[in-house]
Length: 400
Image 1: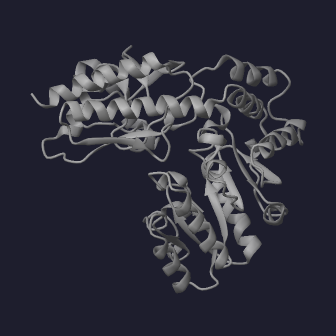
Image 2: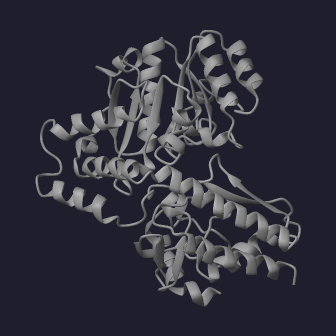
């Protein structure tokens, strides 16, 4: 198995000499220990990636979510390249700044204003900054992964002391845990932020209850749709649920691989963003905005969420059928929607999980053992069926 990934691990040895930890990207860390998974990929197209050793994979990680339309979508990339020819980063404001926000607001009925960034971590951090100014409070209640900034890792030894006193965690499936935070910190919590993938199976009432509890206690409600935006039915979980948050964060699929993020919200809330620092040198870069505008157009034109839901459900159904057929203690589900599937092993006493993933990786299906997956519009039913055939055979081998 190590020979299959020889070039990957040769690169890793070089990286260990010059990059702290050998790998900077959290998503680039080994999927499995002992040289059982690839580490470096050098090209991608559609739903496929090729590792540094030349092995091809049906990719169901999709760079952790940016590629809703698949790698190298010609219309999206052409829009970005065309914009490059007119200047990518210009000294002042650009008309695309206005057009990009206008295009976003059309997709979020409650939203009236927005701001643009380059990454989801920036958008979520900006959302809390606006919420603090709007409410005059400092603390926040959070549920889910919201990025790499200090507030998202408030208990770590590398962030400022006592940050954990202002960033409070709650359980999205237990509203009493949120109520306890409000009881313990009266008039202190500026916002409740929720990553909707933390509520699975999908449950509208659970999310609505969190929103009501936030508002009843004078806090804003923020939906972090960095992962779910453009993928969920209706284009977002809030549209799917019929819930109107005060603020919404977006990134990942927004630019189909081009770096772009946004914060949108009500005018009453977003107006507090005026005059506070939300700017960085590269926020005004326009090629990614052109890519995002084109991505939004294609997602709407092709009804991408409906296709993703159907394809994801095909995969989930097939995974569960393979597990049942081969008596493997595993269950597939959407996290929280079928377009974002995952397979959970209930019993790893025989090392089933590691053996399974090592097998499917060695035969060209890229799945993550510990992170939800993504389907894209570039995946076909045949890609899913090919992946399922390999999955079925790998599960059969677990019994041997």
